[in-house]
Each structure stands twice: as C-alpha cells, then as structure tokens.
Length: 74
Image 1 (cartoon, rainbow, N blue to C red):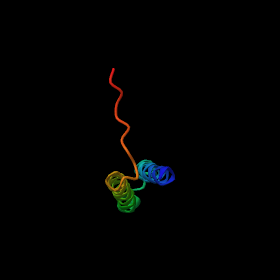
Image 2: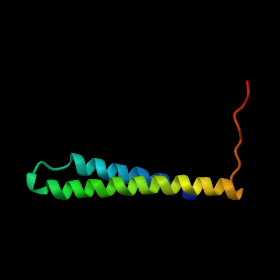
Image 3: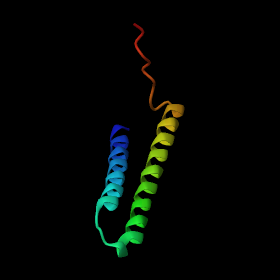
C-alpha cells in the first residue's frame, strides 16, 4: 500500500515539475504552442493522478485495507 502511494506522489511531483520546466524554458515564440500543449498535458496528468490517488485511498478505507488512527485528545 505504502509503495503505491509513494509512486503516485512521485508521479504527481514529476508531472508538476515537467509543467514548470515547460513553462520556464525557451524564449522563442515559435515554440509557444508546443510548450503550452506540453504544460497543459503535464498538468492534466497531475490532476488525473491526484484524483486517482484520492479515489484509491477512499476505496482502501471502504474495503478496510487502511484504518484511521484518530487524533489524540489533549
């Protein structure tokens, strides 16, 4: 369970970094459309991975694979 969540987080951060590099790289106006498509695709992947991770965690809770630990009362 933990390795899967870790891989998802790494994928989310990698997609975010890819979008950031696409946004910051290059000054040529001819590559603007390509750079915009690449950035939009990377952000779409990031959103998709985030939603899938959330749904997986929710499903894991419903199936009893994970249990809440609760907050300490103090």
